[in-house]
Image 1: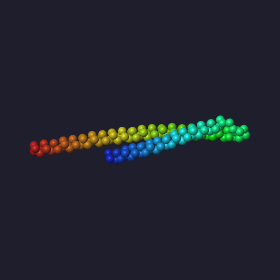
Image 2: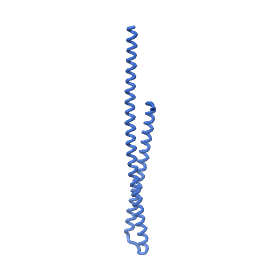
Image 3: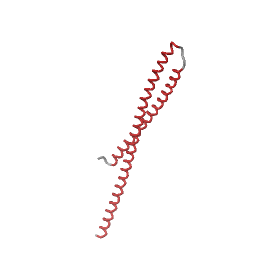
Image 4: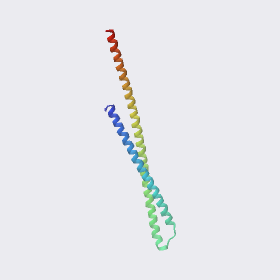
Length: 137
């Protein structure tokens, strides 16, 4: 098992990694949210364009193309929504891991403090016993 210093280093690395992962996931989430917003806007424009009357021969093919575009965009939005859900879940896991690492780090710091206090008390007790032994001897 690593010593106290090694554990602190490992916890610090784990905490830093969790924070970096969380930052990356937040960036990715923001990107997906902006992309979904843009795709929703495109769908809205495509739907409005599809509703406008056009000249009969061209209207059928254009309307059909627009409808296909709308279907593709809706499918893309669904996929991005799923990725956003996954990214959000990953962020929550990273947050949980970071909280756990911080909690463990605090626990180890507390144990180190207790150990140092115990050792200082033991040193004081030994000094007192040596002093008593010298004065009586």
